[in-house]
Image (cartoon, rainbow, N blue to C red; front, side, top):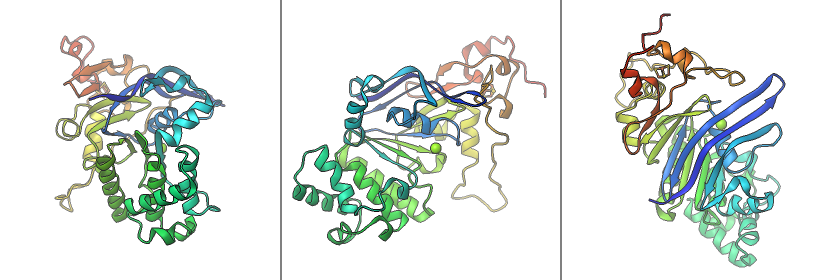
Length: 336
Ligand code: SF4
Ligand code: MG
């Protein structure tokens, strides 16, 4: 498989009144051609900052890209000019956000919002762009596309607006689609339909997808691989099968335990992960999950765990899996 996106050693901070928020710290991951990868974590874990940095959408200042590279189709996006980056956005990388109402222009018809990029980036004539817009609306399951083109965002329901956003994001046939919590604002049935649609389109168009979500439950049907983020770091990655059947990181295990299951009985409660993530103005010296981890050992508080390889596709950042831990030094159970 050919990698289409390679993020290496990426660190991004935000300068705020109280100091420097180290939002992401040494993030590494790859997305291959035609692959759908989920980035999962709770809010503040750095997943959106990671996506916005890939799109070069974080405001600098207060944001600061401190280190790293983002290779996309052979070019480092961090070295492109803003003008070159504008061509990449929308044309080569499409993006879908949580709330389609804020990303759609309320004063423009849906039709002109879809054709805008086609005329600008793909140099289509207006009539060819209109034909393509009708085709795209059909593809995302919007009935009566000829009529719908002339309507405004407020004429559409939340789910239909998100379908329009997907049509806009896919209009130029991007190699990569980044969807940041695309269904969070929608009700459960519509959520499932939108996820289903994304999966179908990804198969049809062979687009790579990064799906950002706090809900591990929605990724199993859509994605090939999962990246789990916590406190600005990647703490585990693996295939869907590895993450669901053989999770290694206590945080991943916690996320799985907090998911409702189909066969769940009423008296079997969901187990939330207690505690809160650490303050990223002063990230902990040891493991970021230490204060919430039931398996924490003495070393966890003082030394940050490094990445341990579990398989060709699975890796984890946790002392429990570190071969050095077997040797025993400082590995006593944390007294608390
Ligand atoms: Fe828990 Fe220690 Fe692993 Fe961190 S390194 S997740 S504290 S066991
Ligand atoms: Mg977010």
